[in-house]
Structures are given as structure tokens and as C-alpha cells.
Image (cartoon, rainbow, N blue to C red; front, side, top):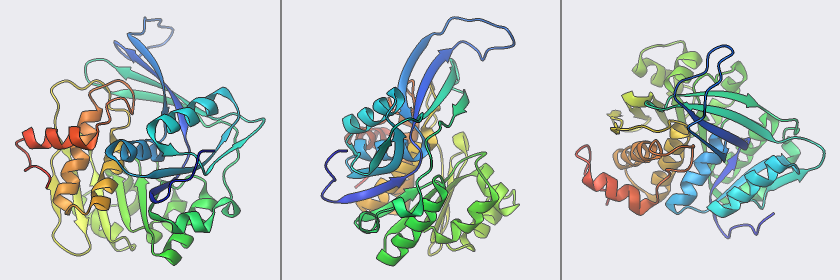
Length: 315
């Protein structure tokens, strides 16, 4: 474990993985053998990558998770430390395997295909959530993994006035999450998740359905079609995606959007600036292989926004 940060801007609760990312000319077909164009090993996971995004931008963050003492866990932990993510609340246990994913990325459009092995590490329990650590954070960010711990952490956050942020990824809706969304303040979900949750295919109706569950802010993301921001108070709006001429890899773009959006909230930016920041970070992250390689610093992303015709520079 590392030394706890003096102040936690965002505490993440989720499952950290190790990604083996392989760049290929095309996705393999049956019995096909092809030469990889590039291979890299890097940490992954929705909440974990959002925290790395926040750390790159300048936030103080910590990860609450459990890893095995295997080589996968060593690599995941070591990368967190290099990136400035506190591992003070990262539990290590012997005799299990940590999560790993094989990610194939298609050259030309950055599309990806993923095979995920969850590992054998048991989930965190409610008793594993330290109430004082949750209370010390400004935002608790989660995606529903470590289910019992997730619900307990939300309860501690509510008792302490800590905002709760939720990442609802595409193809990750499951019915029990209907018990979690009412506990959320900042609800950022993929369009697929919003449709599955609400049964609505129109963006506005899906957003209204999610807002009726309790969140104060709902954001629905839809890849290259941008994102829709629906605050409980104030007007809604659409944030266009920043379409880059050459996309290398879309891995981690949604996760980095979440991290950057939370950074905008922490920095006190208005919603228009925050959405622009999040979209820009996701776009810049698509320019390199791996879910974290292209993550920018705050200076880099503000320079990008200053040069963009889609928005005025951040103040």
C-alpha cells in the first residue's frame, strides 16, 4: 500500500484489470493466424481508467479494490503508483488470480473486440468499505462492481454529503442496478445502458426516465454522436464529439470521458465547459494504442480546446 493522499478528490470503487492490447489489420476469423502490428500491456477497467485520467489532469485520487498477489496484480498496482493513483486502500490477497482482458484493436478505425477473464479474487464486502475514507472524498466514483461494497459506500457517501458518480457502460445493464441508480448524483451512462434501463429509445425520454430515479445530473454518451447533458436544474444540451482524422484505438475513451467530466465538476467549470473537456479528453485518448496511453494533461487538453472551432477555451 502507498501513503494515503492528504485529500481525496475522487475515490474509485471498481475492478482493476490488466489489458493485453493487440493491434491487428482485421479481426481474426476461424482458424486464421495473422501477425500482430503492435502489442502492449497496460492497466484497464472503467473506474480504474477514469481515476488515471483524473490523476493525469491533476486530481488527487485513490482506488478501493482487491487484487491477488500474482504478476497481474503487481503490474496493475505498479502502474497505479506511476500514474499517481493512491493504492493505500488497494487490498492484496494470496492464492487467487487478478482480472485480465485481451483487447484486439483494428487498425484503420480503432474498433475493438474484448475477451475478459474476471479472475478469482473475491469481491469486496460491505465490511471492507472504510467509512472515514469515503467521507474524506469529494466524489465517490463507481460502476456497480463489488456489489455489497458498492451499496455500503453509497450509504456512507450520502451520510457524509459526498457526491456519488456512476458509470453505466454499454452492454453492462443488469436489473439489480435499478437499486443503485436512485443513490447516484452524477449518472453518466452509454446510450445502450439508458435504453436498457428505461425501455426508451429516444434520448430525451431516456434521460427523463433516469432523472426521475433520483440523480441530479444525467449524461448519455453515444460515441461519435457525442453526448447529451440533462441537469435536473437548468437547460439540457448536446455536446458534439471531437472527430479526429485518424483514430488509433477507442479503448478507454468512455472511461476517460467519465474521469474528465468529474475533473470539470471538481474544478467548478460550468456544464458546457465540463462536457467539452470530457469530449476533448476522450478524443485525444483515441490517438494512441491502449486505454491510457493518449490521456492528456490539463495543459494539453486546454491547448486542444483553444485550437478547436467547437468551443471557446476553458477559463
